[in-house]
Image (cartoon, rainbow, N blue to C red; front, side, top):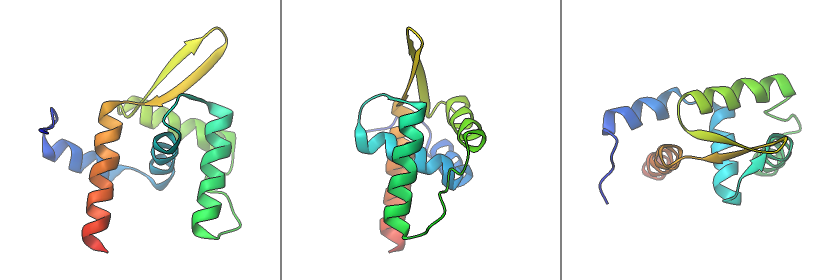
Length: 110
């Protein structure tokens, strides 16, 4: 299947994606459903600690979480929907493509 996005654009987004933002995208891809910010934060840190064996969370504060969700949203990688007072985050098709590109590169480098 051909991508609607230029390869150079996907490469650039992938290169500039922070570890924190990549973790948020990966977490959203694991659960494949919209998540509120608190749940996204909790699940992302749980996954990070489980996978790395580290003791310190990558998304160490609400401030850090807010920065990286805003960056992902601004880049068009995640979108926000509001249901009443609940704000839910989900990955966009662009976010899925960037994450898949990152996985492909990771496999090639392994």
